[in-house]
Amino acid sequence: MEKLLDGIEEILLMGPGPSCVHDKVYEALGRKSLGHLDPYFIRIMDAIKADLRTLLDTTNTLTIPISGTGSSGMEACFVNLIEKDDPVLILINGVFGMRMQDVAQRLGAHVENLEFEWGTPVVVDPVKKKIAEKHYKIVAVVHAETSTGVKNPVAEIGDLLDGSDTIYLVDAVTSLGGMPIAMDAWGIDALYSGTQKCLSCPPGLAPLSFSDKAVAALEARKTKVPNWYLDLTMIMKYWKGATRAYHHTAPINMHYGLYQALQLILEEGLDNVYRRHRHYHDELVAGLEGLGLSMLVAPGSRLPMLNSVNVPEGVDEAAVRSTLLREYKIEIGAGLGPLAGKIWRVGLMGHTARQENVDRLLEALKTILA
Ligand SMILES: Cc1ncc(COP(=O)(O)O)c(C=O)c1O
Image (cartoon, rainbow, N blue to C red; front, side, top):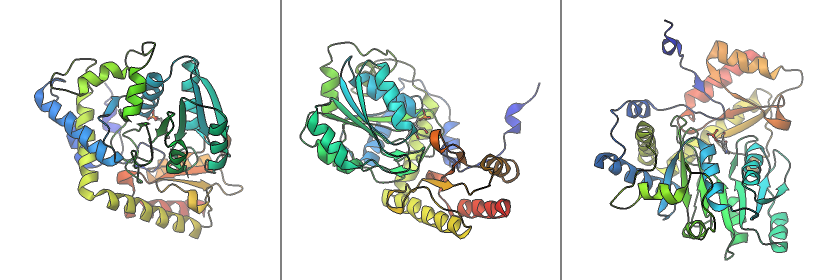
């Protein structure tokens, strides 16, 4: 019988996620499984909640990892907060804003969009105008739009909603652990993320946090949450209090991995982690420009962890990616939607954001493009 696992090569993950995983996280994933109600496992759950609060700069009690990838966090936020016909405004400038729209529409919400050109950030003035004209139950935006490499003005949008009863929902899948997030100070009510980007843990969990306002909206629902698996009213009972009620079996070893990944970030120090992302982003951009390449996004709106590089005229972008993977064991990402064929997406997420990785990619690109 073929032993497929023996054929797995070590690939330098410099795409839009998953990112490189620290050996200590791999080691954590391989620890012996405990029962999902074992008191020792509950201690690990409690530590994860506390560490996530630190990363998010929040005091929200309901701060937990949801089973599943980032999309399960997205789905969990919308499915718990939306009831049929609720007015929802989504700010869209890339694939993940569009995905939010799709999720909200499937739940029967009245979804309106404000769309902005891909590769540019959400502009605050039209949002201000829109929310002055109409009351929305939810306003949603992606912090770090992974499909374009654009940072959206999450704090400024939060200011617009200050004092209103609108729930402010933010996708922090790519931003968490790579750039500052101040959930409480920015007025964010519901936020989700994923483990496989700047947390540098394999895909499988989706950190989520709800403010008291979001929890109150959940508790005030007239109808049951229409999705059993993601129903936070039940999941909460497993994550809080002295008696933990079984809902579904937690993916135990994924939690070990997340616990270790969070420890590594906190040991390095959040400011150092953010500075490291910014530093290697600057190095990468300088190196790419030195090779005659240009960036899609204007400097002030660039994400440190996701770098969109314009594919030069006449270059076969897919051939470059495939040579990088085949010959140099480096993965980078392609463009999506209207940017397909036009950009490469280079990730510097979490443990990937290191000098040797930037150097290795620049060397490889230099040879290939020559
Ligand atoms: C901004 C953003 N939101 C949501 C997702 C969905 O996450 P996942 O693919 O882990 O389900 C991604 C994945 O790339 C993302 O980048």
